[in-house]
Image 1 (spheres, rainbow, N blue to C red):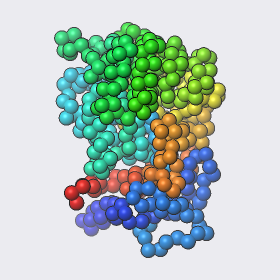
Image 2 (image 1 turned 60 degrees about the vertical axis):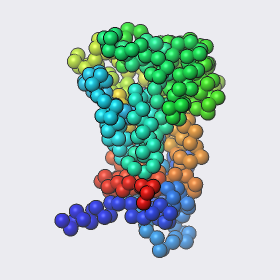
Image 3 (image 1 turned 90 degrees about the vertical axis):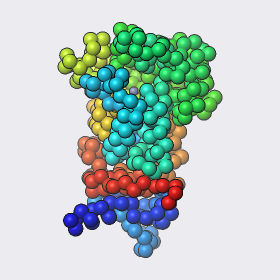
Image 4 (image 1 turned 180 degrees about the horizontal axis):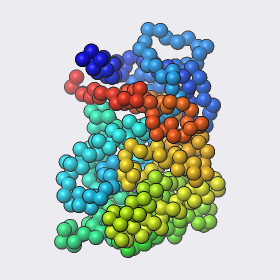
Length: 439
Ligand SMILES: [Zn+2]
């Protein structure tokens, strides 16, 4: 009984956000592009880093100091490609026609929590079938539930019959023909309208499907699906409205078209060729590799009960090339931002992407930079996230040792803090005390 009581009281974030608090770090990495330091005190107020003090400096004595002296502390990670409103399972297609939006919302809350507990304090949600993602994003921002900072795209913008069309493979009478409300758009005018509609719903970023995809139940292949004028219409409208654009792209023709049209990131980039590499470098476009999803669908495709035949065929074709394409892109100097496509793979296992990226030829420092400074830059958050420095968000992840020595340590964080509030501590979930504007 006594120990339960202790755990509960220690677990709550003990101070109002306006009080100064400290985190004593054994090893500290303000970001992976600089040297790690030992014995550092982070001072946090109002969810932000106020000061970073080293051993020789004056440390305040009258404040609450959280002990991470046995840990390696670095900025919380950013996953540039997740789908928090679902998780692929054998039941996914049935659930699509049976689950209520309320049921989807409750699952989204669960997946958001798993994600932040895994050390991912910011995510871009690149495509959701319901408005649940906006409600969960806003609830997290208000401090009602734990979760990462979410930049949400809403529905992906896709041509009719394209990868993002939600009606593939279902009986025609089940759905009305999808339109702009579902992100389905053909021709310049509809493409502009679809972007404007997502922005009206609250989208922070725009997702488009430049090519076919693995998990749509259609024999439409994995290459170009939008015409160049449609791509330009989506990207120019989004940029006019201050939103960046992420393009789902496997095939090289569709990828090249999206790159030429000025997209900000290519997601997957499976069949990138020399022309694509040149365009990546010329336009300084980011690649978000999502190897975790590639590996997941290849594994599932081995089981004949998992996918309809068209999906299994595409999975076997696309999964294996993603890793060699990332290797080529990294070697050529393409900017790489971390992204997993979790929702294909299981939420909370995002950090498995780090070792996959290393297998593609990247160093530990490069993969960790891709999930901090790099991802922050792609998301337009470089002034507030991706580093632990004065003025930046107090979003941190603490590991049991140096991830440059053993990258697998990233899969078992010992502590996570988001906005100065404890999410995970000594490997244990921390009880959430909701912030209510009435109190
Ligand atoms: Zn995706």
